[in-house]
Length: 304
Length: 294
Image 1 (cartoon, rainbow over the protein chains, first blue to last red):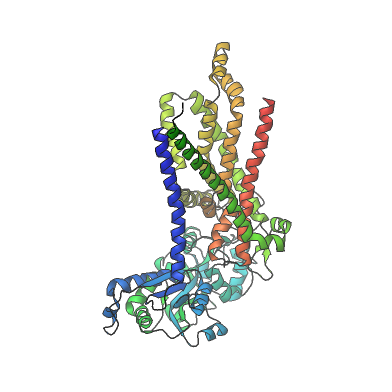
Image 2: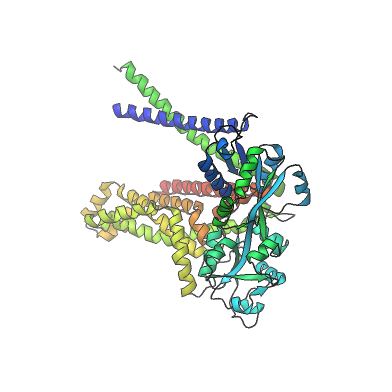
């Protein structure tokens, strides 16, 4: 009996805690939305590609200065608070426009009409997420065809060409294994914009759940061709061989000059001109420390 | 003479338990309703039959093509295949543990088999991707080693402990009179087990299979890493495919909330839940019929 009682009390408590936990989390959520206008925190949201970079920089920034007056003596002595949340590039732009966030994180090329929406505000590029078309180092195609044309790439990725020897007769008669990221995700969107231009990806393409696994697939399997983040190719220089597109190699110079097109910019957008605090944080992001984080996480930092 | 204090306590406990049970059932109902609400535009605009029988999944094209036949077929292949591998092994192991194993050996084997249930599925998936996929590529000279078969093998290892534990429990719960009567009649141990105990325990053993099938259908991580995730309709066990849980896990993160793509993924989730529920219902009916016969 005693034991049953204890058990029931325990169960009641657990039930109550669970229900209360549900309440609290939704309550804090609504508090966030109803933040007063005098709030000096910086709210940033959007692309999940950019979020780790900004979050890391925000952490470093807060850690280094702690209060605003240490960033700049003219600012009041208030703690630095920077919120970073994810939800996708589209969400980032929308939220920056409706004022939910001070900055929207956007990892895609802005169309002209989208740029116009931020004409009174700011568009800041931190770097680029570049996709490199890579093959296994042991695949002879790396030597035979170190550069492919857009048409050849479309033929391979759409499944019109299924064997390596159809690409070049000197290559072995083995199936081409096409590895892509999930269709509809950011990376496949970039690839579609730059290369495929609407041609559907082959139904036989392996959809790999993460960039790391895709790079691993190329390193493990000699017949695989796929697109990977430039950072991953740089980390495994002898195992993944980059293929040039229309003769343009994915080198730093070509990426920065804009000649190499398979990539997307990493942008911060705001509806209004950034205020003093926001500008300080932007400056920090574009400083050596901020751009180092961009590079460490596998992206190409913007040239200043 | 009942102490009123005890009666009050009893009532509190009673209502707490009833309350908890009601909340759990409501939770299931609420979940189903939520998924149905989120996926409603798919059912009303595309239609149940077109959604289920369409084999082309291009939710981002314009006009979008949304059909999940390939995924349903892949799900059934992987889960069914896993059961095909796991059933003989699982039943054999259960019968051995319940009837034949010396108690010292069983004392070692049982916890080891049970421990398999505690291994996170991502670890299984990772091992499968690292070992099995490479093995197929090297041994059978395949261009890429991912296949429904590879996923089935890993799933089989994952569901074997469930089959073993549940069917062993079923064998042990057969009333001891049958065992005694068998021994008294002088039948061999094999005869006793195969002809008397197993038929008596078949309800529980079938239940174990259903549990395993449901788990295999819903398992995400291992199939995501091993099935290859291609959109083509799989023609055999050795083709690649994309089971429903893999589809949802892969694409939900990048779909825009409220878009047709997002709704289609919810609809796929509903189909998966209903498939698992349907299997459970079928087996309940089957078990009732078996009970009548006994």
